[in-house]
Image (cartoon, rainbow, N blue to C red; front, side, top):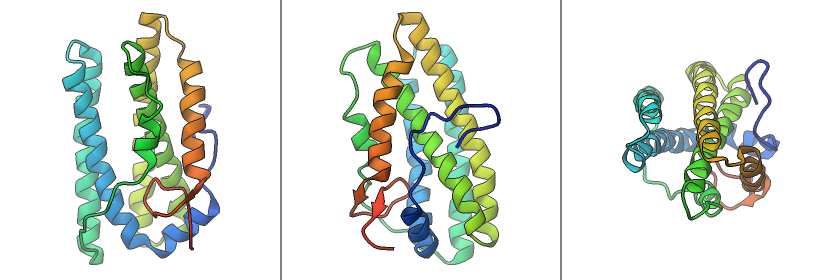
Length: 204
């Protein structure tokens, strides 16, 4: 779940039931994956508008947003190649569940947003790593490549979170403990939906 020498910020591994469902319903997985890449780009851009005074953040997350859009284009190209049609899907409970834990006031809210960004990227990385050996052909190849990018994105968000916490005398580890526990509950709990970031599916 982490790069070499790096301790994972995730508290739980993706359940086997989700991995099994993903291998069966890989078309639906790709559709939601494309949506996730667009959301990841929009999240990075939202930081630029919300915190325009933070130039180091703006530089790093503007590059990250461009990379997420390139990932969307890669997924869309693969969907076309495999004959998978786009469709509107309802959002998963995942991001909303994490955001319910946000502190309302600044500067603590910014720390929470950055830690949540890191957790989402870490989960994406973990799922790409675990799915790639189970999938065939171009989808496995794409996911192996994306896992490296998501690991780097996770590090960017956590580095920004720690820098912000140091500047404002906030406790990164305390907030990571709370938010990672929520994230683990969302991933390991039963979930009526199947999405890229959903929990344990009701059926496999």
